[in-house]
Image (cartoon, rainbow, N blue to C red; front, side, top):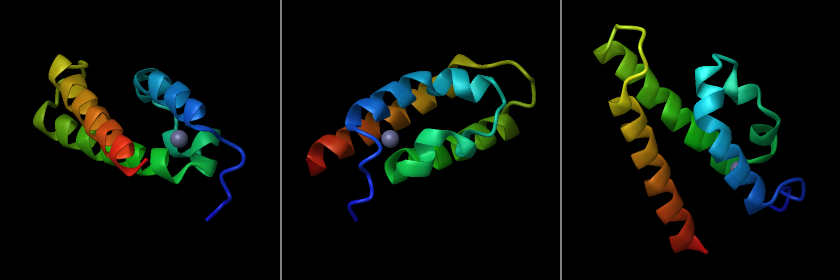
Length: 87
Ligand SMILES: [Zn+2]
């Protein structure tokens, strides 16, 4: 598919840098404009939402735990490695 003329890998960087904030803000991440054009980041966000949901089940306390962000950072690092491999 060649429908990605509206975003560049730089947009992905930018978006992923904002991810922790977006996650904290409790907004509907999947409605983010970047995700409308980027299959890669939408699947990343779905993964992260899954991880976050699991973490909430494990930690019913409403307190952002460093362990949660460790998991998310690991997922991001894995994703970045996969991206490098395919390019
Ligand atoms: Zn992207």
